[in-house]
Length: 171
Image 1 (spheres, rainbow, N blue to C red):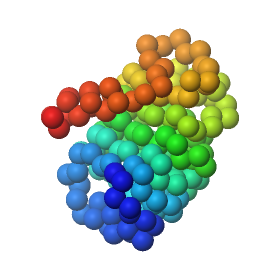
Image 2: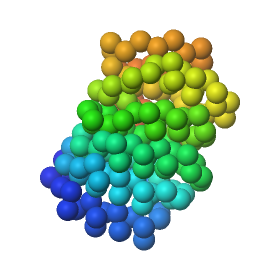
Image 3: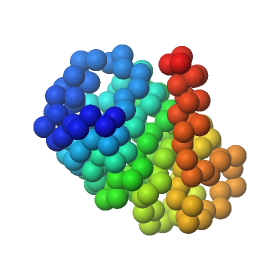
């Protein structure tokens, strides 16, 4: 996080992720990876069976990255527990919401600062996946959704980051 990495670094990160399949957490928050860079990184993580935490908030991720993240969330093995994509203001949330209907590993998702065009689609995706593990969904305070499930709607993810790190033995 906060390393002043730009789009040129994304290719090198992506290539190294193809080789390093043992990475457990990746924090890229506040780096200007760009949409193509964030997409390349997400694509390189498909099939990774160790990564439990991915933070690409505030990285200028948009449509390409959203499609790649959707693929990541829908492709086994399902190991990613916490995903932070918050405050990527051009990020298309539709592929992520679609992926929620099949993903079985995600326990916390941060969509704060993003426009969710169809709250009903989000609700249906969550309710249609009987095998989901999502416990925490971070949304903007102004966003209202009625989910008849045991999911906490919160406005800050810090507690969940700490919980995932502790359960995975990071602390």
